[in-house]
Amino acid sequence: MSKFTKFLLFTVALLNAAGAAAMDEKAFDNAFRALPNEPASERLQALQDLRYRWLMESFPARATYQGYPGVNDRWTDASEAGIQRRQEQTRRMLAAVRHIHSEQLSADQQLDYQLLYQDLLNEVKGFQFPEHLLPINHMSGIQRSVPGVLNAMPRRTADDYEIILTRLEKLPTLVQQTQALMREGLKQKITPPQITLRDLPAQIRALMPEDPQQSPLLSAFSEMPQSIPASRQRRLRERAYALYNKALVPAWRNLAEFVEREYIPSARVNTAFTSLPDGLRWYAYKVRTSTTTALSPEEIHRIGLNEVRRIRAEMEKIIKKTGFEGDFREFTEFLRTDPQFFYTDKEALIRGYRDIAKRIDGELPKLFGMLPRLPYGVKPIPAYAEKVQTTAYYQPGSPEAGRAGIFFANTYKLDSRPKWEMEALTVHEAVPGHHLQIALAQEQKDIHPLRRTQFYTAFVEGWGLYSESLGHDLGLYQDPYSKFGALTYDMWRAVRLVVDTGMHQLGWSREEAIEYFMENSAKPLHDVTVEIDRYLVWPGQALAYKLGQLKIRELRTKAEKTLGDKFDIRAFHDQLLSAGALPLNVLETRMNAWIQAQNTASTSAPAASAPAVTG
Image (tube, rainbow, N blue to C red; front, side, top):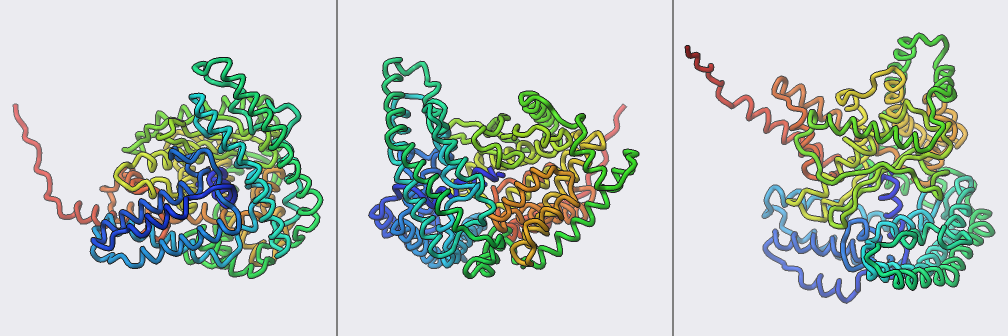
């Protein structure tokens, strides 16, 4: 999530820079030439349709998660020619949007236009930076994303399995193209930090155990629908296992050996992203696009320091209330180590999360008028990814594909998974956090599919962090340790503002960042190390959480002060979520207009007459 899941959506975006087939160039040219010039509304609609189709057919991994039909048998083309073709097509779409007479559009269409133009413009600006030469790291890349994509594919019929096999047949090309990008990255001295790649070979090798039945790549073939005749099931499995041994294992083994022998030894030792060619401008671009603000890294660093001081003061108050005799460091060490705070059984941990989720579900109508129809489940993070994965993440479902959302919780190293963090995690990853927001967006049939599936990290993750504060209204955080846990998670996101900008802009070392994190948080060292290494390979991404939360909280405070007794928390939340994910600058304009409209309506409404009294 991690997002998008923050983890899954982010890694799918990276996967979309690699693979073996894309939207047919001729089809794009024909559709582009057929765009109407007038009226403006029809041109906008046609461009949205083209953009959505282009995204789905150019990036089949994304299409699989969305339930978009017809492209599940392929991957994205990551050849140099494919990358250049997509960049040129994006530039053409941006030019076409610029020729729309936006003043002729309605208010709703103005929003569609603004989002389409802003997204395309940001993408084109990003083409100056060779992001495609960083296709893989320990947090994301084909070794992480491919199993998830394969597992998300439909598997109801024998034809579905034929499509899976076709996609598997094309997988070696995906691996080879990814490796070619990594080689070019080495030539240009563009790699992730060497220290973060230590577990990458093991991640790749985890996909190719000796027994094909144990490979995450072939999990679809372990249990097949009874509607498929046994003889057909046997033939499908035999083809999958033969393909695995003859083509998949050699391709992945070659990649693992390349990573061990060439990539890691030659990867950069300097951990700052700004040490890359043109790194200062590249990092500034990442900060702007992740946060959807104009804030500089230095400004964000100062915001982080202020938030750390504020939250630390709240944490100190709770320590005093518990009667604990010791300082902050001793209290956090107590929370990290005392056996009372940890499960000793993985299944018990998952049951604990499911219990919290069920308790939250019944309280949601207090805060929301609109609730999603799509359900969600709670599952453990797969074993092949759990060691380097963060504490939890959300994988969006798909109404079109008939797939529920999933809150994945990490059961690796149970002595680093304290109970006091579980309530805050659940409200963030499941409800009212990611599942509620993303599922509602998916179900908004009055907005274009392009917007229903859009993922702005600052909004999505800002909403997730803001949702953690709603735990108080949902009956959570009843004991001081859970309250401290909620503050710990708020502190976690505040610390991100300091250490991300510190490492990439202000010269902090990895060790200094870990120490600062440990001094201001109760999170275990394992989690802190995983987090710091995440910021090293996903620079700027983690800044979006706290900045998004602060903007939503600012808007709520403004609505409460402006509307007074007329403020309705359910109406506020419904309005905030009704348009899907939005950049923070667009969200602010939209919510300010709503607040003004609500205030005008409340002040201009005639006073209610007294009820009649009879009898």
